Length: 463
Image (cartoon, rainbow, N blue to C red; front, side):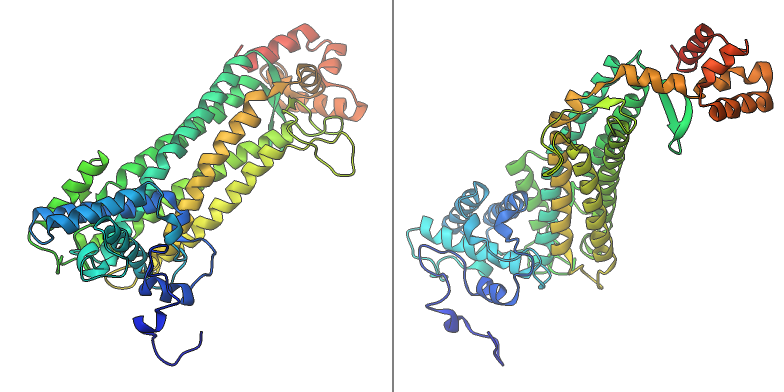
């Protein structure tokens, strides 16, 4: 709505939800008018909502302990925060995640909803802020500038746990295939050209190893998120909070969550610099792209089946074409590639937003949060579905692997110590020119029997 002045709270009466059936207030209503770009409301971000509610509950408890908030108000706020954590208030958390107020609209949406629910717990109607006020009571001793980065860290840590668990399950699935395919010889390839013999189990050992490493590194980044700037208030001085608040609120947060949170060593750094998000995002990007590389490999190895490599048989989870009968596509590997593309794009957004901090704070934390949450969620859900609907059901086409290996020059390297590079290269070229396998030509010329070629292949693969 066009206006040459900021609308007052009175302007919103009658059109803004201040009745019992709707719990946000004027600050949220202004944000609804101004924003709405992404269509992703705060209430859709479960881990973030839980983190914000925990911060508000911890603050209420800390303020009560320090004598700056009475027992009645603190108890009602804490009860409202429990409702918020349980998901009972998510429909009232309506501010768009890409709001442009540096997180103030998100924080005030939470403050207003918590205040109005607290009023209900005390037997009052929403909007009677003399009893419980969004700013004076719910937001006491806090600023958007320390609440939002604290909640982002907490939410990312909560989301990382399931994501890491999914990667570890995927790694275990690859380890199972490594063991199952340990003695299956196949043709190793470099630059998409025939290279040397190896086992299929060895290929899957690489998939297992990288996935385990991805999980391990993400778990390490989760440890970085334990340091919180809560208590810094607006710019890092702690102004507006009582003496002892910083230590008390961190302790209360630990009591509520069971986590070993610690205060930021330097509160000014905790507000001004967002490098911890950049590192986390880069690690999530690495996870997405590494699993996408595995997806690419599986597409190549299962290609065909008649006109491609065709060495792997993927579970046929759905029809691959609306016009070509019987066609089955590698849809899960392709989906993992798309997840890789997406998290790489999210990382680009996060990196730019982290770099664009201004002086004492970073006002772009909402877009950082949205893209981190989305990226972590994609890793979690993608890894689980990749395992369940693809990796767990992969089977080799052993006949095709043997035929491809025999038709190649993969065992040529075994002759280098005997004949030298030049003569062996000539044999390879002759075999290609005649359209026969290297093993057949080597056997024909008495250089290497077929039995010795098979033995050389197995030895080259470490069998």
